[in-house]
Amino acid sequence: MDDSTVLVLAHPAAPELAMLDALPDTTTIAVGITPEAFERTAARADVILNCEADAKVLAQVWRMAPRVRWVHSLSAGLDSMLFPALVESPVPVTNARGVFSDALGEFAIGAVLFFAKDFRRLVRSQNAGIWDPLDVVPIRGQSLGIVGYGDVGRAVASRGHALGMKVLAMRRRPELSREDPIVAQMFSPDQKQEMLAQSDYVVVTMPLTPESRGMIGERELEVMKPGAVLVNIGRGPVVDEAALIRTLEQKRIRGAALDVFNVEPLPPGHPFFRLDNVLLSPHSADRTAGWKRRAMQVFLENFERFRRGEPLRNVVDKKLGY
Image: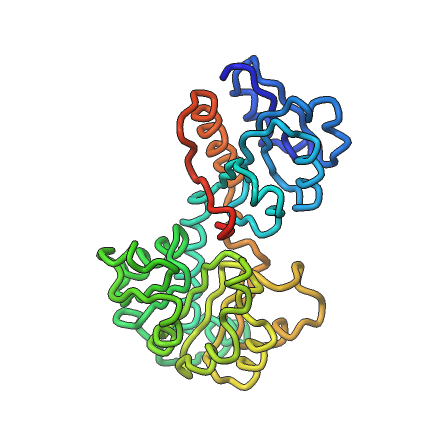
């Protein structure tokens, strides 16, 4: 297909939009962040590229564009953009899966080392001018439990395995990873508590879906080891925040490293700010230099496949939400 119209839901001044110049000259591109921006082009649109619109705006644009045959998300997470009409339609949705995996894998291992080597105490002693020797914990031989074994989960696992950790992993279809050489044991969702009880570090990478919301709650936190650390790099509401705060206040686990939260930005005075057994990241663990350009490159490569009538990459299961 040579003549295509692409609706780009983004601020027109976004620098990564310059990469769209690589599209064929016959491509019509309309850019805007409100439905009104597409009044003249939506009726003939073939593709929607969603860079930053929420589900409400995307749904409005969708209703204006009955010919759309493909929707792409510049991000990997889809919880903020899927709406019933899109989910039920035959139109494929693709995302930027894989762009963020390495950075998130590195953050997760950084969080493991933060607690294993007690970097908070080291910095506190340094700032106080105190010589304060301490025993640190080797991570070799410790168990790394991963809740959600997709691209990000495997990025965490490969780094943990390289450092000598024992990788445990849970996914909806464990049979897909039974032969994975870096996983010591694979678990299904109904074996979740068994895996958590064995893990020294638990890394949550799950996307937010109706099934995953609150899947790490009071009961799951209770079965974790007293010295265990929870790392959440998936979505905030996957972990029951109130239950986690109680657990951390009572020191029932060693600590938590969190990149995602129920409400973002985290409100002033939130309990997480005062807890000394929490490492906070302002949802920036995957914000590496150039990530938007890399994500845009995924779209450009997929657009070429779309134009040629070839199968798209990174097609998501809309009903599952990932």
